[in-house]
Image (cartoon, rainbow over all chains, first blue to last red; front, side, top):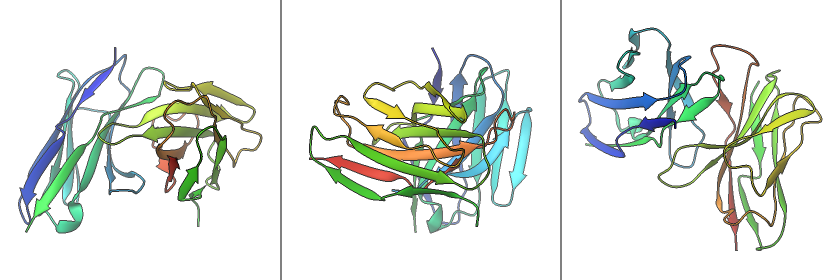
Length: 109
Length: 114
């Protein structure tokens, strides 16, 4: 079967750095997405990785290791508005998105 | 402005009634999707369509139906056969056949069945 694992919840302090991990086992791999979802709202795109390595975009970075079936999202200089759920999704061999359950990130002052 | 609209944002229905959720996009995307999201769970695919007049069942299609008569529209009907329809429903679209399969989401409809 296909499986994506993320921690259910994480807590971090405003101004700090947090790393959200995602491990996956899927039928094929054609890329990995990270989305941000505030409570009661639609997910919004954060990053896409298809090759191994680190992609940096402002305060957010995403890393991929295809051989390990592993990705992480790194958030720097945390702000209160970063309190949200972060969803990891893998594009499988049929080009369908397989979604993780999401990680709820709580930012404390 | 290009985007995806869903209406209404909140919907209440009595048990046993069918209800249709609308989804419209003006992004000129070929592919459209319907997801269901329950608390503490990831997005689960209900139906998807890659072209007009064609659609495929997702992982949890039972109790739902869709149509794709126009490129811009992909309505979802929640039928009385759906055992537990109360959930947050998200519609999305993407460019068909793109390796970079970024999906763009509508604001969602929260359906409550009383």
